[in-house]
Image 1 (cartoon, helix red, strand yellow):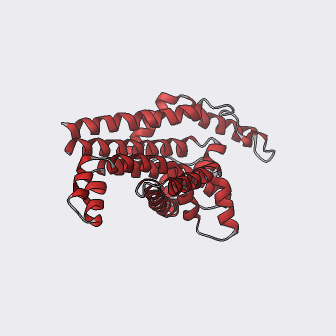
Image 2: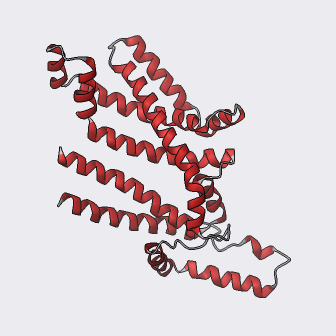
Image 3: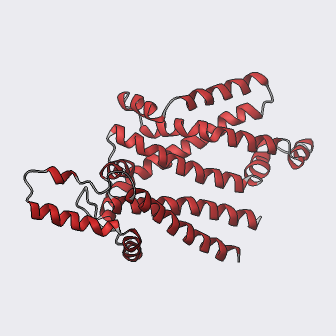
Length: 280
């Protein structure tokens, strides 16, 4: 029953998220304005035909229902800005963003866990101060500034994403590690002389598995959000850059597809966390 309920909630949240994304674009200022309206090379009949095509999107409920019917068959419409099928644009750009997001998430979680361990495990004031200060300093630097610095140094941009993710997961990891450190099970294991490797695997990783899975999912979504300005500023041909340009062009088919995909990822993370937590 838990799995069925999670799947129903997932479907509802995805549909609502896609509609919310479409509504935000549709009712944004200037949606009805087209830059081609002032193009002297276009005839009046051509401009009128373009406006009529745009009016189809103005009727939001009808547009969304038609869009969902096509999306169920793998057809996410055609981009108005790129004049290409949205599915083709995603297929071309997804590997670039996937590498950036996956490596950035993994690096951010690893560095955040290391810094949180320094803050919690030694139980010393000075290492805790250093770890908290490093995390605070990274949090104060805008991700776009980090990305530009790495871009000019010709360093991997995934490392910039990792450093931007680190301070955003540090506090949660530190809190979870602090709770596990003082748990009765771990204290009893240390009193029995259990080795450090077994303590880490059984009483830290396994005991906090639901929290770690939920945090990994949240970090993945954070990394995708950070990838948007990074790809836009550094001219990386990924989905983040596509989202940025689509937002500027008010490209409703692209933004509606992005809304569905991002909502699906966020809702899936929450559902997996709920199922794992219920299974324990």
